[in-house]
View: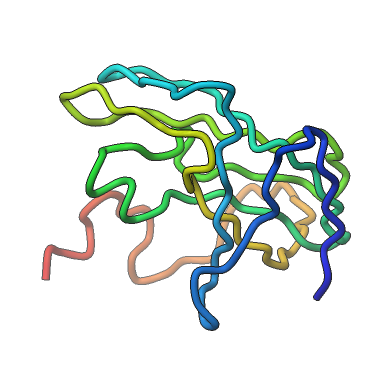
Length: 145
C-alpha cells in the first residue's frame, strides 16, 4: 500500500520502518532545539508531515517500546487516531511518565505509526442484550490466572 505524505515543514523526515517485519513506522521529532520534558509534563511535538490515509483505514500512533522503557516517554493519549479525512500536520503529544526530566532531540524517533483497516459500526439501541456466561462481570471478573 502506498501512502501519500506531504512535508509541511521542509526538514521533516518521512516515516520509516526499522525492519522488514515491523508493523509500525517510526515518526521523527522535528525540533528547532532539544526539548526537555519534565516529569508529569506533556509536550506536543512536530513531525512536519501530513498524509493521505485511504478511506476505510486509520493511522494509529503508538509508543515506541524503547522510548517508553528507557526514558518513560509515551504518547499522552496512549493511542493517537488519525482519521482518513485529516490532512493537517501529524503531531505527537509525548508525556513523561518517569521521575526525571527527559530530553528529546531533533530527528529522534518519538512514536510509531500503524496504518490499519477498521470497521465502521452502526449503533442500534435495544432494551435488552443477549445473555452470555460472563454477563455484566467487569474488571477482573474472569479471574487472575
